[in-house]
Image 1: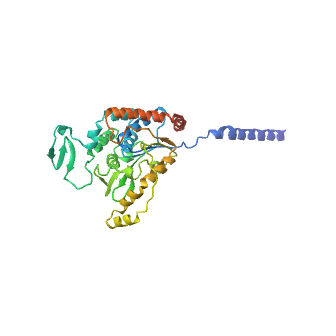
Image 2: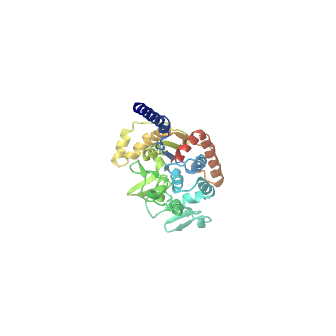
Image 3: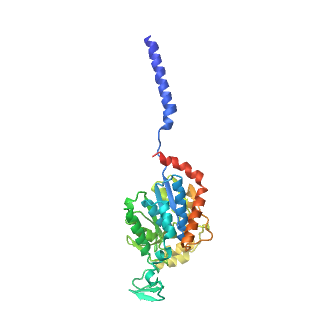
Amino acid sequence: MAQVQQTRCKHVLVAVLLFTILFLFPFVPTRAQKIGLVLGGGGAKGAAEVGVLRVLEDAGIRPDYIAGTSIGSIVGALYAAGYSAVELEQMFSQQEWISLLTDRREDLSGEPYKQEKGITYIFGFPVIDTRNNKFGMLGGKRVEQVVDSMLALKGCVEFECLPIPFRCVAASMMDAEEVVLSEGTVPRAVRASMSIPGVFKAVEVDGQQLVDGGMMNNLPVDVVREMGADIVIAVDLQQEKPQNRKSDASLITGLADLIGLGPIANWVFNRPDITKYNENRQRADIYINPPLPDYDASSFGNDNMLRMIQVGKSEARKQIGKLTKLAPQKHEN
């Protein structure tokens, strides 16, 4: 009898073990895949990125990491701080972008010519600044001030306190090297990331003169991968897809080295940013490229903003099947 009971106990134990293996193990939760969002540069076309964000929210997706370049750094910083797509849509459609980006003084908009404190204004636009020798006409201070005030409302002016980890891409003007900003004040980093050489003055950060990140990395998929993203959603505003190129300009770059401009000469002839851009496009898991052939980086204006936001929404909805598959993973956390 005792032997029969021992046999039954063994059978019960085996049955329990089989039940555990077959039915319980498959439901042991695994680490949810981390989603990274990349917002490329493109000036006014950044409005389309806001439209994409609206679709991501509707699909139930909240990114774990965000990386942005130029206008993408503005959108990314505000979104990382907690602004919703609806709030950003209102901002983009209502903001006076020309005045904001050009530091235009509205009180001088009716003055054909005005000199004040070393600055020459033409109808309120600052065209000459004799106070320093930095390369570039515009300072970009108003953009920094607006971003600063908006982040302050969310209590997140520093990188370290953003609810969503964020990286901002700029470039060292003299070294022609990519600089990924992840510390300090976000508004200043954003201002550096969007400082188009020759248009905006370079921004000094940690002793480096920084300019627009699009010079080296306009679609920083690699940056968000390094942050820890398993799946990357990339929003690319570039319309034409440039081809990689490599030229033998050793003599010219050698001469440029003698006057300290070798890195710039190498960038001009070989365009390493194009190689990185094409590589990053291929590395994105979900690639969204809103078609904006009738718009360019300077297509600001409320009507243009609204139309580009709609284009962003339409293009993102084409990926809705892939996007909705990501949403349940986020709900498991």
